[in-house]
Length: 459
Image (cartoon, rainbow, N blue to C red):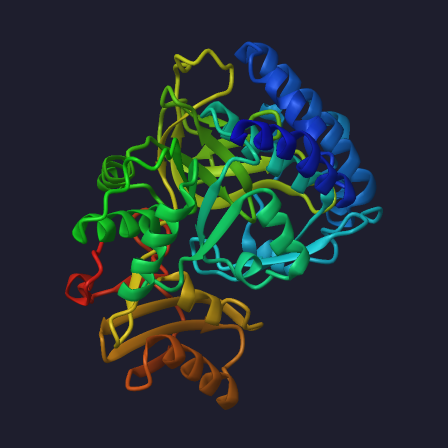
C-alpha cells in the first residue's frame, strides 16, 4: 500500500501541483535523467549549447547585460563555450544590490522575491522565475531518486527558513500532508523540543530525512543520549545541505539513524549546484550549472586545484546569475564516479558553516535564528554575531548609513526575544569585518559550550 501511494503521489499529485504553479518540473526531471548518462564530452557540448541560448536571451531582454556587452564591445555570438565566459566580469553581491531592477528581464513574468544573508553575512535581495524553480526542483528530485526514495515517500524535514516555516497556510499544509512531508523547526532546539522531535520521527517512521547536518546530528545525539533507538525505523537516507558537512556529523547521523548520508551543495542565490550519489560522487548539475574555480586574482585554477566557486545558472534568464561569486571554496575532480554518470564531481568543498547559539534558558538554536533578525535591514552591508557568553552577545555591523536609534532598539529587542531578556546585546558599527583565512566570513561565532544544556553540542 505504501509503494502504491508513493507512485500515486509522484505521478499524479506532485505533477498536478507543479502544473498549477506553472512549473515544468516533471519534463525537466525526465530530461535530466536522460542526460546524466551522457559522456562527459557530450554533456559539455549540451552545456555549451544551453549557454549560447542563455547568453542570446539575456542580451535581448536584460538591460544590465545588454549594456555590459555593448560596453565591452562584445556580441552574444562571441560567447561560444564555457571558456569564453572569462571575457565577462564576475558578478558579486554588491553588483546585484546596485542593479536589481536592471537585472530583471523585460519579458519576465511571475518573478518571486527572495533574500538571503548568504554564507558571507551580506544581505542580498534577488528574484527567481518559474523556469529556475522548475530546474532546481527537478535536479533535487533526480538526486532523491538516486537513493531509491521518491516524492510521496514519508519525509521529515528539519529546516529553519522563514519561507518554509512562515508559509504553512492551509494549501501548503494540505500539500505536505498529501506528499507525506513533516516539518520540524531547526530554530527551536531546546531539550524539550528535541524530545518531541525524536518522538515524532519515531512515530512517523520516515523513509528519508532532509535538513541541516548540524541539526540532524544534534537530534541524533540527543536520541542516543536518552537511550532512544533510531536505527530500526526504516530510514533509507538522510539528505543534508546548507552547511559544511563534517565527518563526525556524517558518522553520528549514519550510526544513530542507521542510514547513509547524502550531501548536497547549493543555496537560494546560486541554486542547487551538486548532489551526492550512493557511490560517493558529489555530482554537479552541469546541464543547468556551469562551475568555474578561480584564484584570489580571479584567474582559473587547474582542474583538481582549490579555489573560489563561481556559478553560472543557465535557467536564470529572468534574473541572471552569470559568473556569480559564491564565496565558497572547493575543487572539481579529475576522475569520474563509479556510478557511471557523466556529471562532473566536486572533489572538495569548504561550504557554509553555521554555528549554534545557546539561549539563557538552555535552548540550543541554529545560528540562522539570529541571522534573520539582521539580514533584511536595508542599509546593512555586512554583519557578524559573536556570543561571548550566555549573558553577553556582540553584533558587529557595517552599514551604508548609520543605524537609527529605533532600528538599534528593534535589533536588541528581537535578539533578546531569542537569547533571553537578561542578555546584554552590544551593537558595534565598524568600517570593516575581518574575513577568515579562506576569504569567507564566519557570520555567527559562539564561545558557549552547549553540552551543559542537556542537548549535545555538535559544532
